[in-house]
Image 1: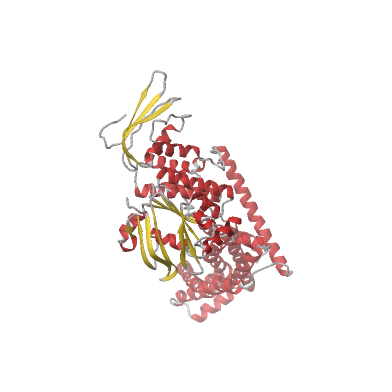
Image 2 (image 1 turned 90 degrees about the horizontal axis):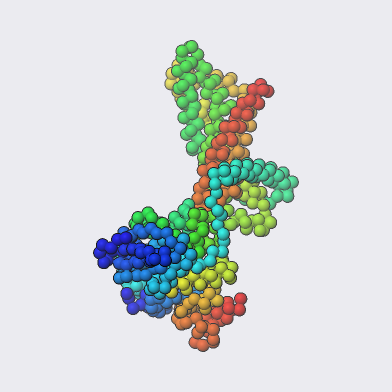
Length: 364
Length: 250
């Protein structure tokens, strides 16, 4: 109980002989000012005012919070407007019922089920995509082929500067590291073999795959997630058009075509980066080029090329998949973009490891 | 308090300095509900934005709570906006926040009460609109009707003197729309709030509004300012009458 100055909000409780609590309130109740705190346990509570000066929503909110557990508090002594404000919070019907609070086990189970269904959805999407390509091949799919050139430009041509920069620097760094080690055994000439083979077989494809995840996957996830949000995907479904076929196929095809080309480009630029370092030392340009060409067999080149096709497919598919299953909110679109990049890069690294094992088994 | 909550004279509203609706003149007393009515594209929402001070009118004068918002500083305009509440057509709930956090946001930013009272106020406002059991849900987890009600709770967070509602019943089934109307009337009754609502739902307008502004696309001018019942008979406002007849039948 507190009653300090007439303009400050106050409240006090008294218990009558029959166990009922009388809650008296007074003063000025304004949001942002200090409000009194009272604690009582009773089945019956009557509320009255004494010198109540002015109030805003904080008073009915305070009463609502304190009288919530009382079955039917007696508000009849309150001013009519205050009565109405308190009763309003109790009487508006809730049409939809909310879920009960879940326990730890339930949450764990829900997480397990969600993870399972998430992988299920991913597999389903891969299936739809594969089937879509098959149907497109048979001329039975509705695909927005008009988008193909634009997507090829966005995913391919527009990515040339960043691929060139990163490819050049990767080759340069590899040459530096290689030179330091090879110098110790007097085999600096093999720095060309190291850079060319690594770029053609491994780094060119891996690097362009990761770049595609960073710029193209996230863009696809945002585009398709936003289309989900604005119900454009639903509109396509309503028209009898499969959104996976219509939207995802041109994107996946565009990236699967462009990433291998970018990978070849990155390989050449990387070899060039290595040459700048190697030729600034003991090696001549002729020696470097001869060694580099000798080092990269057709098998290695094709191996890198195949990898880049798969990495391109993975990057594009991850973006389309996360976009299609994005939650319908701004937050959901953001999450879709992030998870597309994470999923794409993870799958690319896993696929690279699988390729390493297969190529080793078949001596490629 | 000003004698008129909203008063405007020969107001013209539009985009980029080009008027799409002009000749808007009316005065609304505090505690009344005004419906802005007219066919799609006539500038209802644009008028609402101009009346509330969110956008500047093309020409004419408009006073809100006794102040001409076109001639005040940015700071004064922001202060004036805090005395208003808005319910946007698409609800515009912040999707990364729960319903409780959506309502708490303006309370925290402008009233800065202690945490406990902040929660009390937010819970009370959500209880007013019947969402006491859904406070910790995200906007993506609730229905369109619930989102509208949550947005109304957020609009009421700071006890606004004027509430602007853009199509409060749009996208709702008739039952939920009727509940929304009831809620609007209760808010007016309990808080004495002046309400401006953009709508083309004639049953809803007849249930809630004290006055109607009818915007006519053919002339590009306000055709009438009158109680909505006046538009149910063929009088001095033939186009408003035709609009009401058409929409009432549907």
